[in-house]
Every structure is written in C-alpha cells, then in structure tokens.
Length: 427
Image 1 (cartoon, rainbow, N blue to C red):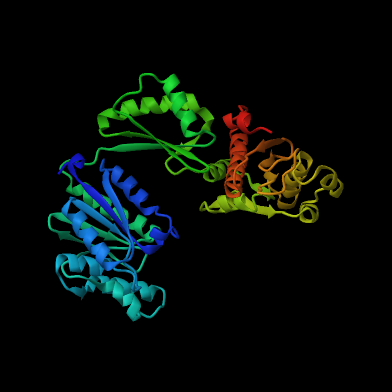
Image 2: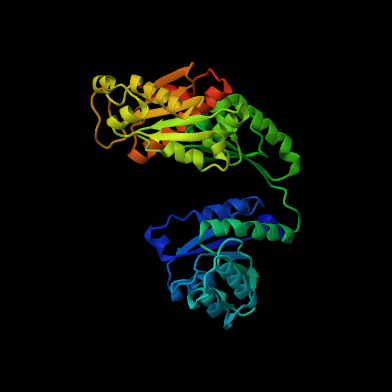
C-alpha cells in the first residue's frame, strides 16, 4: 500500500488527558514521525479510562482505518485498560506473554526491584499479540490485527513512546510499496513570528516551487520553519528555498533540526574554549537551567548566580548598595555590575545578566511590568539594553532568557547587526 493510500487513526486514552491534568504531546510526536513517511493522520480521538467507551471507539476506528495507533493505558494500575479492551474487541483471552514477562523481569532486576503483582499485570496481553520492545520502561508495546486493521498499542509516557517509535517507523517503512522518499528540513529561528516570516517570504520569494511544502511551528521561544519534499528529485528545489530563507532571515536562523539557543551558545563557547557565567534576577535561574539541559554543558558553563533580592546582589555579586538604592534593581548600572561581578567570581570570559519586572505586580510608570535590563559580553566589551515584553510572567521569563542567550550567541559569532525584535521590544 502506498503512503497516500494508508488511512491512519490515533486513539489516545487517559482520564488525565481528558481533565487537562496532562497535556497531550504524544499525538503530535506520532504525527511528526509518521510525516517522515509522508503518512498523514486522518483522525484522532481521546477517550477516558472507561472500558465500554474505549471498546466501542477502538472497534469503530479499527473498522474505518488501515492502521490504528493506541497510546496509553499499558501501565500497572487498575485504570490501565488497553490490553483488556483489545482482548474484548477481538474476542480472545488475556494471557501472560512470555516475552513481556521476560522484559519485566530484566527491567526489575536492573533496578533491584521485586516483580510484584501490579508490575506483572503489564505482561498480561491479548492472546496472539506481537510484542514491541520498550527500551526504557516496564510496559512493552504490542500489536495485533482487528479485522483488516493493524492496531499498534504504545505507552503513554512520552520518553518511552519516543524510544519505541524508531522501531515502529522503521517497520512501517519496510512495509511500504516503495521506500520512504520524504525529506524534511527543519530550521530553528528566534526573533521571528509566524505572520512576519510568512509575509517576508510572500513579499520576497514570488516563485516558491510547488514541490517544496512550507510549514511553520510556532513556540516559545523558538519558531521552526519546515521545508518538506516527497522525492529525491525535489531536493535541489528545497536546497534553493533554504538559501533564499537564509538570505531573507539571516542570523535569526539558529540552526537545523533540534537546535536550541542554549545548545548553539555552548557549541560556540566550546569552539573558542571559553566559558560563560550568568547572573539572574527576574528569570530565577532559567537561563542556567536551559544551558545545563544540554549534555556536556560543563565545558562552557561553570557557574550561575541567582541574585533575586537586592541584598544578595550586593553581598554575592558586589553590586553597589548606593546604586541599587538610587537606580533600582531594574537598571543599566545594576545589570552591568551583576555581569562584571559574576565574571570576577567565576573566572568566566563572558557573562549574561538580567534584571526585570516579571509581574503581574511591581511595575511603575517609568518601569512598567515587562521591563527588563540585560547586560552581556566580556569585561572589555560589555553591552546593555532595556527591552519590554508585556506578557504573562512565565512567558516573560522564557523570552528574556532566550533573548539573553541570543545576545551571547550573536556576540560569539561577531555579529553587529541588530535583531528584528530590538525595534519591537526596545524600551
């Protein structure tokens, strides 16, 4: 069966998704991975942990699909119902699957845990199922035919799902009538909005080739631009579009794939054998957290300081008390002294300091909520700027942290041009 003919549906299970306690990111991941094979999801349904509702929905979806991916409900608790529901729909018994049991025994042995009855429930699967290995978690995936529909059951834990999708996608690719030829180039950007980017493309690239699919995925703090083609013959056209985007957006492009601002900064520091320190007030350590999420971050990031109160800015970083009193914590001289103090105490060659008003309270006429001062650079070349992001507190912290990292990225690259968001956000 060719990719365009394959009818795929997703069934998500779990009361926590229905209540909003858990945000569904798994269906987006599954759809993206299927997109690598030029397969689109035709329908997605979410159902709570109810045996009758799940059974009815699974049977109806399997009757109308070539492939049904069920996500969630494979765990050890009483509300994990997927195996039992699938057994009821197909009219088979629930049996202890030897491969699933062996997996559980090995999983428990590695963690020096007893294999209790609750965990053993995860080895009870519909008779005749084929196990799909879970390299991370305790619950294996499994699949079986329901009529003419192939049903694949996957765990709801995002990390486990991601680890299993490699196997599932590779198997799907092998079953296709023709090999996978879809190619997706993902460019990560910062400082551009979807509407701005689309308008710039529309105004500047009138002859966009039809064989190159353009897509956007907005997020905080980055925006992803996707260039997708369905054949190797279209790759030259895609490469041409990439060059046009690089000409158009320039240094707003961070990198390809899963590139992040923090990851790019650490790459540049590593190349220069340099180190960075952070001095944070309004972001509360978020910048340091973004950096340390990257494996190997200790090569370029040795120390960060969270100096929230004025007294700590003075005692830890040496910010002048008189300047704090006269200018206030959200001021240019304070962030510059924070940056210099952080470099002196850490020995780093570069620093990034931020101090702002995250809100919802604390603003004044001169310094409204959303105001932030940033300082970045080296001892000999320290820059500072005041920006305003009048958004809710968490988003403010995210965007300020990203802007600071972007400034360090630009400094390390030796870029003199100002990013577009300076004109929009400059106080």
